[in-house]
Length: 210
Image 1 (tube, one colour):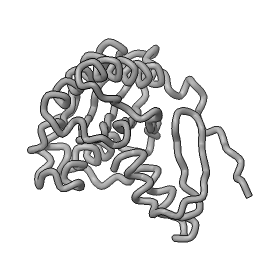
Image 2 (spheres, rainbow, N blue to C red):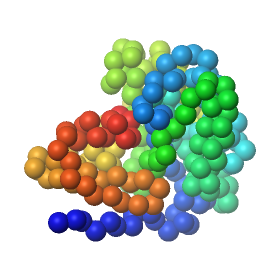
Image 3 (cartoon, helix red, strand yellow):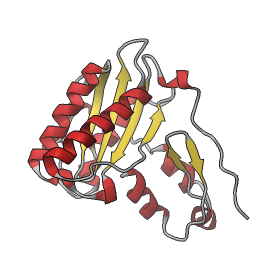
Image 4 (cartoon, helix red, strand yellow):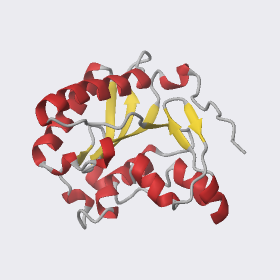
């Protein structure tokens, strides 16, 4: 029996203004483009430039070989996260194709509007700890492509309690049989449910980054 698709994109106003957002962008086919210093340094530089251009503050970021995590906040009442995310992908995809002869991004990206009961420092610490979880380093402070424009992040990371991303909470709370049946994808305004026999962890890794 096919399950009805449900629309989960919140009202557009929820993505505007001085709100806090958690974003993830994955490379096309999970190609580890950013394992090399040159493309990694280029993307971090463009992230900073485009955040300033579109009036966002970078509270935390971590660029992994095949995905980018960002915690951003609108700097103005007119800041528009959806517009920023679209322009960031569009501009860097065009430049990346020219510079590195590669298709940079997957079509879809993940976004989460941070609720009032979610501490931004906990989410930031989750972002900065990603290289340690993936075995790229033993100390998150040593990873060269992480940072913050607003926090003393090398101190904050050790004081913030653990945070579990919403997509992991949604699925880990289910019975194993339910996890195989329903995998929820939050991609650009649509919710897609599908039969899924692979492990959830693999699906989450392939789509969203860890």
